[in-house]
Image 1: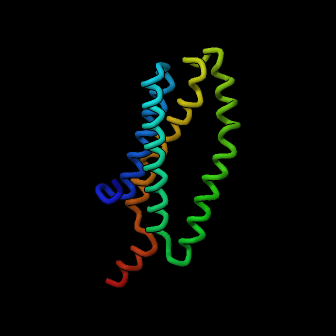
Image 2: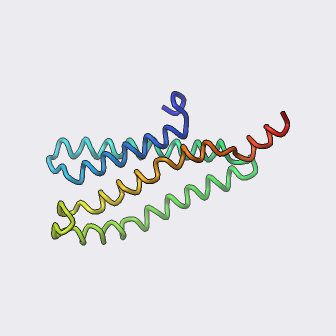
Image 3: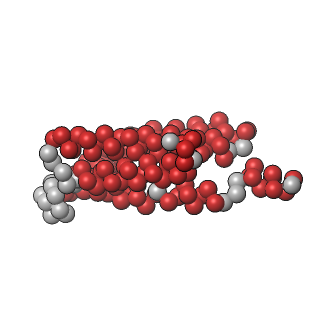
Amino acid sequence: LVSAIGEARSCAAGLVVLAAALASSARVRTLPLHALLFLAARAGLAVAETANVALTARHSRPAERGPNLAYLQSFQAGCRVITPWITNYLFSLSLGGKYGTPGALPFLGTALLALLTAPVPLLLQRRPTGGQRQARREE
């Protein structure tokens, strides 16, 4: 997918698939369809994370590539520690059904964040990076 449409579009598409699958799984409770939506969300996340790493590696200067990839991995690991606390709080808020379907708030909140983040790789792609600016100056 990355070779067909590029890293930025792959990352954005993965985030849109993630958002759509999470928002849909917040409403769908039947098991076969809910499991398929879960797989679609995981696939969207996998595409977005892989494209994000490719974008970071491509647009980092050689001396900064290693540290930038390490920061990315550390941030992802930190999110895997913190987000269960946040989703637990959102889940407990939505159990009474006050905010729609009981238990749906973590899914909808995460879907909204993924959808709001989807345009970022496309916007950053338009900005020339340090290496691209230097290549233009040399021309």
